[in-house]
Image (cartoon, rainbow, N blue to C red; front, side, top):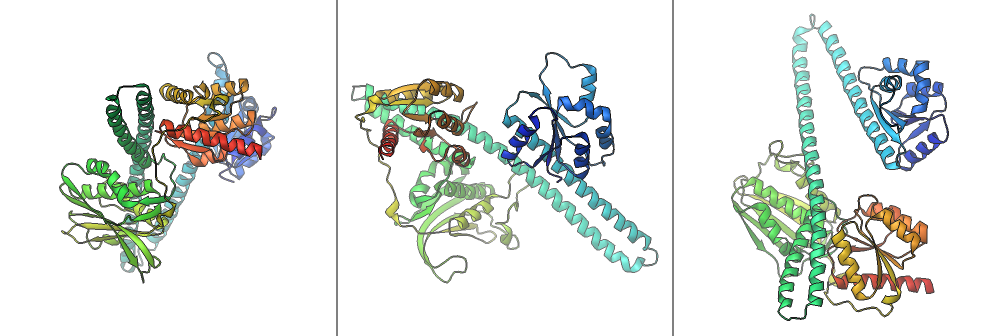
Amino acid sequence: MELRVLIHAPRGRDGAVVHGVLTHQGIESFVCATEDELIQCLEEGAAALILTEEALPQLVADAQLLDWLKNQPPWSDFPFVVLATKREGRRPDKEFRSLHSLGNLVLLERPLNAETLTSAAESAVRARRRQYAARERLEELKRTRIELERLNGELEDRIQRRTKELASANDRLMKEINERERAQAALTQVQKMEAIGRLTGGIAHDFNNLLHVVNMNLELVSLYAKEEKVKPVVDRAKSAARRGARLTNQLLSFARNQSLMPKVTRVNQLIVGMKDLLEISVGSGVEVEFDLCEEEATVLLDPSQLEMAVLNLAVNSKDAMPEGKLKITTGTRYIDNDPDVPDGDYVLLCVKDTGPGIPANVLPKVFDPFFTTKPVGSGTGLGLSQVYGFARQSGGIARIHSIEGQGTTVEMLFPQADEEGEEEVVVRESAVPARAGACHILVVEDDPDVRRVIVECLSLIGYKVTEAANGAEALVQLRAIKPDLLVVDYAMPDMTGAEVISEARKLIGDVPVILATGYADMAAVERLAGKPRLLRKPFDIAQLGDAVSAMLESAKDKAEA
């Protein structure tokens, strides 16, 4: 009951509406119809109170709520979210004083959307959780103080026998304090890394859009230009754009802004593709050496997660040795009688450095979350634990071997996969569909350059194209036309692509959709829009044309069936 959100909105349907919004978001809530019921619920326990401005004068006049606030324990600063009516100019002093008599107050002016209300409620609940944590710490300190007072009362007649026990208790207390300080420092570092990840993801997303525009315009140049000497120039530029796209995908993977899925992966090919990123990450002082096996070394896992694991290990090695050698080795092994993995064929990936090594007493702890030997601010303690967790989730194991003065080796074992399901990516020209001229496509993309090049490419193939710069504009277009297919970006400022798809299907039914994006929150997409066709940026004209043609043909077959 202490984590529920109370709602007091005696007029109209405000209470029911707010309750419905919070319930939809998984927030426990309860509507209090009267002032007496509200006070009773507050005494029973609650995380926050959402009330309308109209209900506040009666609550202040009855003084029950103010009395309850005055009698709060020292740790409590109960949060209020007041839904106020939007006004022009300054509020009257009486209303201003009534509002601020509540103390911990968030004022939301109506009308407001569900996201704003949900965000305010979640923030209030989080703040109340911290207050409960403070309460628990105060109670713990109170219990400790009482215990110490009891011990002091008995100290005179048991001084000799208790001295050793008190010293031991003091040691335990200091150890707990040190552990708490270390955990707090680790949490701060994690928050910093999360902020860096968000920044990296944002930059990578914008850069991915730029690469997409460059790549597709280069294709248009190669189609429009008739001179033969233009082709090698375009090919060189496209090769550079593809390298930039690989780096961007790795940055998105680091920021966890990419939808990740396991697939058959050639480990040697993936490591070779990471060469530039690894050399940049470890710096000029560390020599990177590759010893890759002759076999294909195929595994079934998420390649982006494997890239992150290798990159984590490389950065750890660089931190341990400003100068030295980093060697990455691959191979295949048959493993039997191993307690950690089932018998079978495995692919071995080793990352070895020539650093100072790890002390024997530290080695068993290195895979523990938050464990780090680096100074505070220099590491999260999560790198090796991520490597270990990823290896276990992929059906394998991660192990570490190290001797002081002789470097460190991290081995990752993954079950070898059958190459038969692997699909080769073939770059080819897309054929113009025979019925392209009869199909109408709506392109929804907030970036004007990306939108323009997609529209131009679809028009070049032969489709009739209408464009929209955001979700709201797309819904207006949908009311005016009924397109045969939607091409929608995911990350847009007013509505996400998933929300646009959901609203579009409410307006015009089950329309075919292509979600064209560099990254997407697939959980949110599937919750709102099912599983649309995903087309990852940057893509070329052939990929766009194939995806559009395939979706239109699929929709046609479905309609005929």
